[in-house]
Image (tube, rainbow, N blue to C red; front, side, top):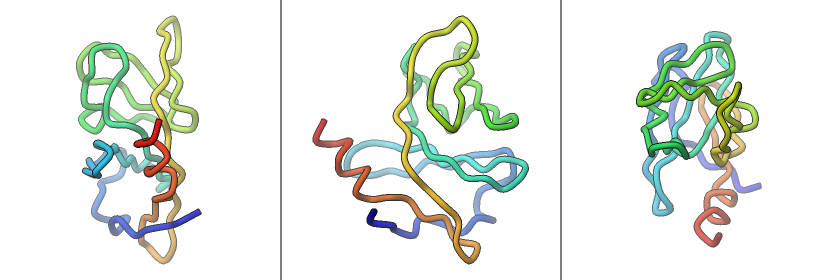
Length: 110
């Protein structure tokens, strides 16, 4: 993996998100109340809603447009909804959020 530093953990509020703009598109980086960090495409497969503007609860995010709920671990829609959002490996080291840049590059080749 090719880890790159994208932000300080405290730059994202607990139970919040920030949008990371890349050459391949936008990625939503989420922080849970327990300081776990996840990254998903910032686009709901249902109507294209910006997931970075959704509500983070537990290890899920709710799309702000039509209330679809996605598991932050897998990117899969929960409940009766169907769809998946691509996920990106990320981690926290020394208070900094790192994301796998090689995974971002693979996403653009698909």
